[in-house]
Amino acid sequence: MDNKKKRPVILDGDPGHDDAIAWVLASTIDDFDIKAITTVAGNQTLEKVTYNARRIAALLHLDIEVAKGRNRPLCADLIIAPNFHGETGLDGPKLPEPHLPLSNLSAIEMMAKVLQESEEKVTIISTGAQTNVAALLLAHPELKEKIEMISTMGGGLRNGNWTSGAEFNILVDPEAAYTVYHSGVPLQMCGLDVTEQALVYPEEFERIRALHNPIAETVAGWFDFFFIHVKSLGWAGATTHDPCAVMSLVHPEIFDIRDYYVDIELSGRYCRGATIADYHGRLGKEPNCRCVVGLDRQKFVDYLVEACSKYEGWEV
Ligand code: RIB
Ligand code: CA
Image 1: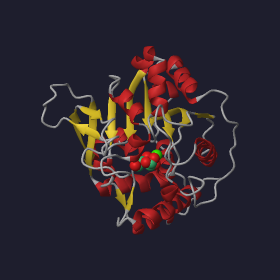
Image 2: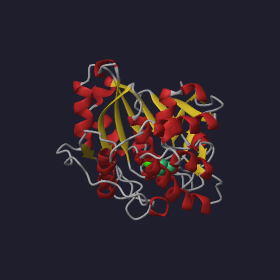
Image 3: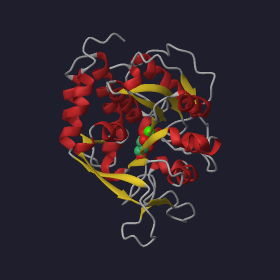
């Protein structure tokens, strides 16, 4: 299948172990034509997640220059998550050094360029704070029509994971999320509702490691590190957040997806960053979001293992 028939995709994230696994998955999808990789501060500082993104691109032989995004949220002060992802933001397996220079375009300039130049509508897969996506929509409202969908990992209709009410990606930049959720662009939300069901258990890390190719061993090592803190919180498996935002695009049949009107709490003293679904239709507004709220966990894991198996014989 040639590129012009493929689905143009932009990967925007804050790698981050689960972002990295999501990008491994994305790079195995024949239907995807990855047009850009852009970074946003969140799991670690912008410098660190950008260096990680460039190393992931080298590991996966992606001939795509990484474009650096905003180093802080639209309004809020930056929060980072070294407890989950370590001082580098991607602690654990050794990775190659970047094989390409950093793009001289900013993330927003790169995103806009891809949208302007693409004949097909473009899918943006956002697995970090939505700062870059919001900045793109604010700077280039005329390009909204070139966006097929924004598939996000973020939010939680029933709970948070950084505060009781807010999930990390949304809480890092609630104003950005508000801009995205009010943009009118087709939106898919993989919140904690599904990602805290998308558990990968240690014995399944071994299924991946047993594939004995460099990418599978790296992914297993990322799960090893990520699970250290997650296990200390009481989880029996790794909450595999970001890959849901990729897999729900290519295997929607294994997910439970509901259409709701969702809004972002900006001013709650205890609930700033909460994603609130109008389950009961009290607001009288049309749904603005396809909310992914459940999955077939076993099939999710099987597809992850299958993706890692495609790197048989890979040279790092
Ligand atoms: O809450 C989970 C999200 O926050 C994931 O995207 C993880 O990578 C962190 O960014
Ligand atoms: Ca992330």
